[in-house]
Amino acid sequence: MSWKLFSLFRSKNQNPNIKAFVKNAFGISAGSTSLYEQALRHSSAAQKIKPGVKNSNERLEFLGDAVLDAIVAHYLYNKYPTIAEGELTKMKSKVVRRENLNMIGYTLGIDEMLHLNLGRQEMHDSIVGNALEALIGALYMDKGYVTTRDIILKILKKHGLDSRVHDDIDYKSKLHEWSQKYKRTLSFKVLSHRNEGGASHYEIALYIDEKEYGKGTGGSKKVAEQKAAKQACESLFKS
Image (cartoon, helix red, strand yellow):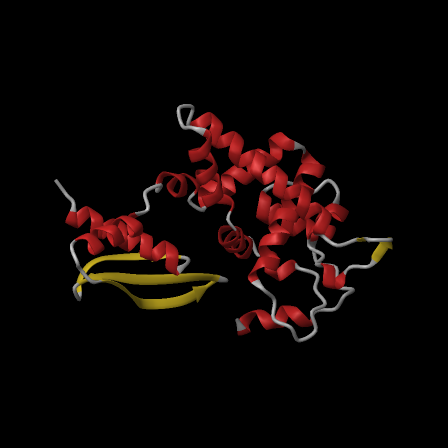
């Protein structure tokens, strides 16, 4: 996206206001700004500190990924005591998937704070999501598990944690099976696509034999199609 390109030419020596960012994004005062600075330092702007190791955010990303998994698994384990391990795993994957983390990263303004040296290369969305995981690692090192858990769960809930894990029916597959069985033609059409604050927004309509049966919106085509399919299922299979 062209609006991102401004961030690709920032000086390697830029020193953003880390404390203000951490306060705004997470609602806490940073105890160690060096941890958060490292979490926002992409490997393209890092320096080698010993053989095989740079002062980039990659190690914190590794830690944050594990902490995020633990936070979400802990939450789901307590909230859904009767659900089996396999279903819990599927629910967790819907929350920690890369697309979701990228979107949350943009919402928090991580892309504005990243320390990059990409030249004229475009910044991939995954860089933002990876930095979010690194920041979770920094939070954990700075504040411990309980504080990190509370902060991250609050952010995840703000971005639809509970609705994501509840929508566990694959309505799209259900409709495809139905349409094949009854020889109906199923299709999707993108009605609109826009970008706001670094996040994509799609509106998609579902048609059966060229008649509209449902509409859905979401941050990706997959999400919007699933919502449109859910609406169509509710219309077709209502009691």
